[in-house]
Length: 86
Image (cartoon, rainbow, N blue to C red; front, side):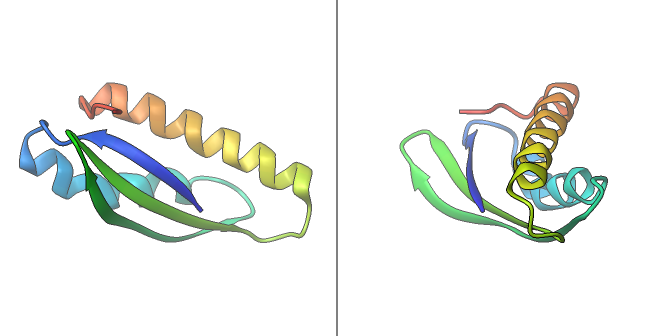
């Protein structure tokens, strides 16, 4: 589970598309299962989302590798889609 802060100043259609975008990128990973991406709260000009995925093997090294891969994949996809990280 990790928080993800995005700009609340983006067009509504980009904000509404976030769960699907996050699901798609997380689901590309091996040994992971997407759980949810939920709009948790407003924080000034940012929207805070809670992203949850499970690593399917009990291995802290693997977990850290998958977290890195998910973060990097989201960052690249957000740049491509014009989704602003806050």
